[in-house]
Figure 1 (cartoon, rainbow, N blue to C red):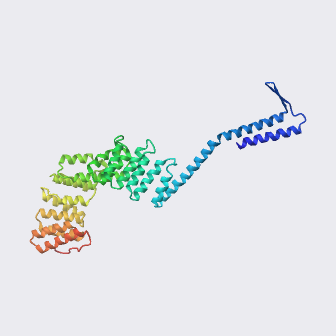
Figure 2 (tube, rainbow, N blue to C red; figure 1 turned 90 degrees about the vertical axis):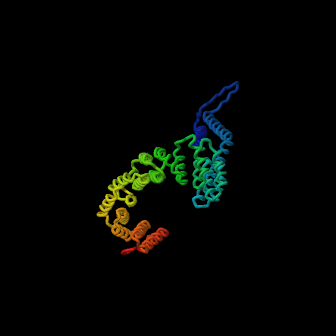
Figure 3 (cartoon, rainbow, N blue to C red; figure 1 turned 120 degrees about the horizontal axis):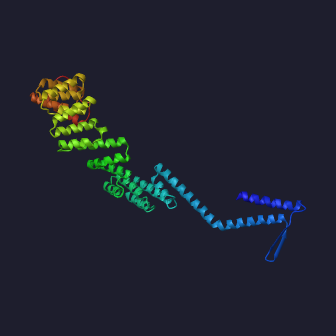
Length: 399
């Protein structure tokens, strides 16, 4: 626009200058419908310039309402944008009520009002007002066709954080009914099952979660370990059920000590003591684990002598392992080696006192008809069990 005006202005100045400076400045004759117009060339150019300016002026006048409307709309958007920015800044500063007010005030003129209402819903929940939260969520739901899942996911997330488990389940089910493999919905469902301790339901989701890769691997592995530990600890499992659980477990987790221990306990509970000790011994060759040693010491194997020999062979390399000393004490009690059992138990307690070690020592003292020593051992074990304080008096010498 500015360049065009400069061109026209230059032509007009040039035409006028030519008119006065040149003796022969040209002649133009126009005849139209019986009318005749005579003029010089510079005058014609001047008229062309004036006509161009007139047309541009009329065009600007014609477009003025639209341009004014656009200018006003841009101004409104800018004001709305400032309100929204101030709203988010207020939320980040912890000024929840102010942030919520600014976001909802600017929502009507926002380019994406759904975002305003979702943020306002979070602010309302943080202020402890679920009713107002749900109101903003309804406003968000009505804003944009095709964004239903975004609103439902936000709603489920807020309900989950507020421990509204049934409501969260209903919100997520609305998504999975149409999109069973929706990654974020599956993730939130898994968090729901974890928080409600629904281990069976969570186990059913684990394969899908590994496929969609929407949960960090460390978190997924942690969920998997806890789920399978709970499943192995279930009552009345038989050997077939235990092996099925083990086969369903990802191979990368089958060497996890906690899961090996869970499987061993389950095998022992269903009467497969010998198979449990085989699994424990195989696992201990790879990585030493106190829980596995503890379970081994609790097994009631048919060959009690072999169990004691195995335990004592481990003690050669680990003479100050309190858990292993306790296991050796248990094995000696089964073999009726009372003096040896007492020595192992007292050594275990001297290194690291535990309620279990005191309990075993108390039972041994009763077996030996040393009632005072038994009472003292039981009392110390009970004290340690109730307080959970490892800094208990240690036993030196005979109890």
